[in-house]
Image 1 (cartoon, rainbow, N blue to C red):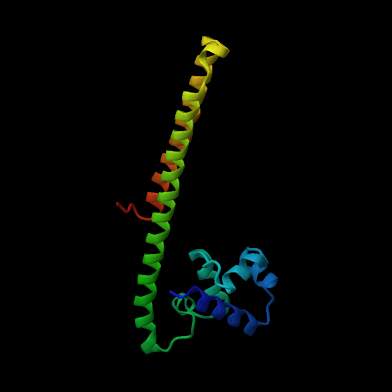
Image 2: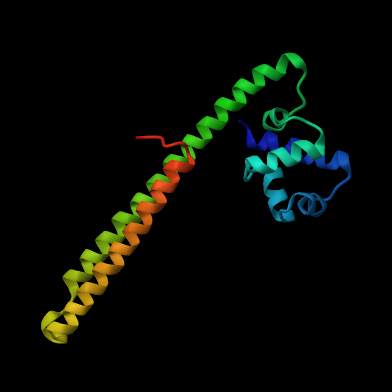
Amino acid sequence: MDIIKIGKFLKELRKEKGWTQEMLGEKIGVTNKTVSRWETGTYMPPVECLALLSDLYGVSINEIVAGQRLNENEFSDAAEENLSGALRLTECTYRQTEKRLTLVMIASTLIAMLLLILIPIRQIGFVRSLLLIVLILALAFLCNTLNIVALVQNKEKYGGKDS
């Protein structure tokens, strides 16, 4: 899947209609900057926007993802290739998100451990030290719990893939 090619095709389709990026954005509920990012290949439009673009431009989603108009012979070949590309992109996104969330959990745990080591118990008193320790542990617990929830949601979003 070539998102630069897709972007050029989207730009070509928009210009054929005589629309500005702002006009297209208003029709589908996004900003002109978002349309620009799609057309430059910075981002791929989400699935729900692909359906809207397909209807507005009178082309299939398969043609949009192929980055060109397709004849009948090319259509089924492109569909297979586009589906494979979309699955690879989804898998890559899933793995990247999983890695980032895991790194945040590790970092928050290490920071909490470092703070616990650095607490000057004798200088600030036992009660204050105890309260500080409880606060640090609570924050680390909260941070890691939120990351675990995000990991589970990421797994559900991308079809429950396992490492």
